[in-house]
Image 1 (cartoon, rainbow, N blue to C red):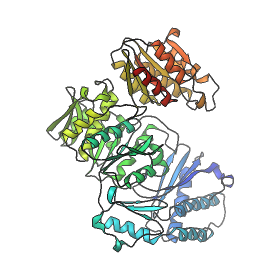
Image 2: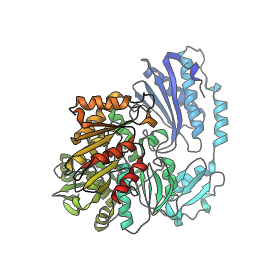
Image 3: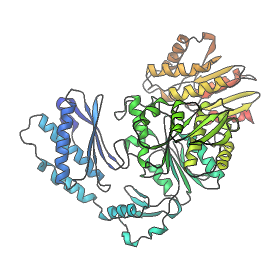
Image 4: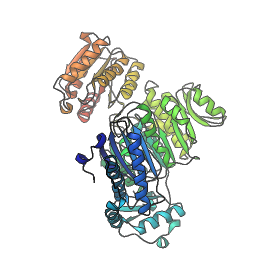
Length: 572
């Protein structure tokens, strides 16, 4: 490893060094990545030197077929190599050794030799190398059998026929009954918002088909009705766990940005993938600084399908539409509108799309139209008021078609699913009591909040209330955007909550004052603002304020379970 205190030549510094264990932003294979900070104007020179030293090291190590790629961004660069899956720790040492050689050359060292690094690198490779693992990987590809690996285990196949082995006790390829290993349908879903709901809604379709569905999400990993574990399982580890589970008959994988950037995708092959939408959220991490960067990141999921499998995209999302122009995938578009220009052009050219026409979801392939279900018959759309959930239903329809489910089964699954705290915690959970409608939601970014604000604006209401708070690590501009989004609902009351457990460097009361300041600047009157000490207190005040005919949007960023308990008691 490089000592960063000694690598400040020309303001150069390593910010991260890590393995990429699966398909990633750069390609559909494993490797290693070195993220560097480079604040001067010598980035091109640094990259040129690094690539040269890296190539010399790879060739000397016998990795002549491994590739090198780089990516420049504001303030730094990513330096990437591909590598055998059994030597990824050694691969990170290669990237760092090449960087150390670059530093020396920039410092004017007269002799920069790979001999200073080869012995240590060879030792690391020899400690990791696993010929039996590589042999099984190659044999699986030859027999068209799915192959997954991690530090401890490798597996062949998905679902009930999965064969699992410890990495240090691997069988010979000739001892495997390859014909006995089968596959299951797999879908991957990513995007800024809607991932969890899309996966859970699709699982209702799978259940309607009489199959046991496995899902991964940011809340839990579940097979059928059994929750295997709670927590964030939207990364590669969750995907592998689910696909290795013997009771999984269909797998729906939520894929978050963080996991893709840190380690890559957990699998190499899927049946279909979905990108729900892309918005400005979590920018500034891993060199992803712009919306365009984030779009490219989300489209990493396309690495696990071939050009004959459906890439399902949002035709109402400009980022998706623009990025798709660079691809040669088989795309299925979805849209709120049957006259969306992207959809019309796509259908004209013989493609497939899913859209709303006369209040009904339609799947069209070339000139053949198939009605699926009326929007008002899908509970999570709130009779069409929740337009974002109409989008999710469209995506699910296209995804389930790609996995082979028939029209009646899709319609039944969409009709059966209700966004209850049990089915879809914190995502549009609707409670009705005493003529009041209260929605608990976890919308935490500007895009998601805007969608929920528009939802309650579209719902018939005597009065509307929005309860919101925010964590202290959000910038003032970001909080301003969140307030602007919340006010799209034209609320009669804005209830502002302190979030003491999420001050994150701010002073108590600072964020609520900031929210109030922006709300007033956008036209809210002082008598339309209430304050609460936390979200539980806020929920109680919202319930006391409300009367028959009102609609409440309660943004449960903290104390979600307690808020749901309070609302359940009102509904009993």
